[in-house]
Length: 115
Length: 112
Image (cartoon, rainbow over all chains, first blue to last red; front, side, top):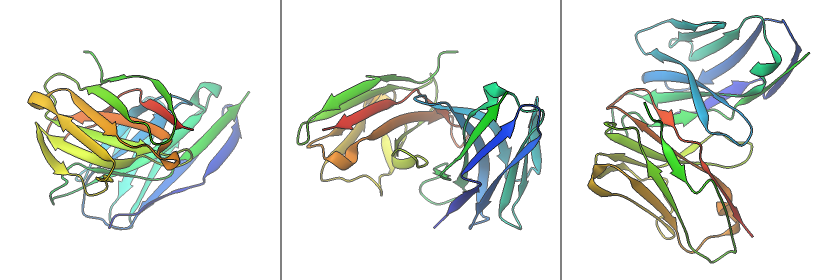
């Protein structure tokens, strides 16, 4: 059974800092990994998707990496802004089986960027 | 391109009452998911549809929860009777086969 852990649970940084959010998982037989953003009271917004065969993806100030051998993914946010404040969720889709594509989520990291 | 639509956005009910949620996925997406997100936790899959067939409902409390996807498009999730512990946000997502999942805004359910 896939288990996903995100560290830290909460993070508070001053504006402008570069930061790293961590995600670890127990089963490396994954199909893809997604990082999501969730604002209070809102649904999930997909930030980046990394296929199993890829090592990283970049979008603007965001960079996500994937290391299946160590069961880890990181989300790097450059030059953080107050608008980046949200909960960030890591989710994995396992390969094969009857629930193909099913996402298993971590519990999230609550990020606060203060001016 | 229109996103995933859900309604209602908020619902407050008394325990033992029934409630239903509706989801309209992105056009052309074959796969539809319902997730339950309890406050402070990540979403948990309740049920997954491929077109109008159920692929995975292993974590759906079948004594009180039911879901259907008519004609492989819209879906409804029903709870009857509701319990206090069902208070959560119910998220609907859709994807092309095996692809990236896109989420709706969710329905926040409060059971009193």
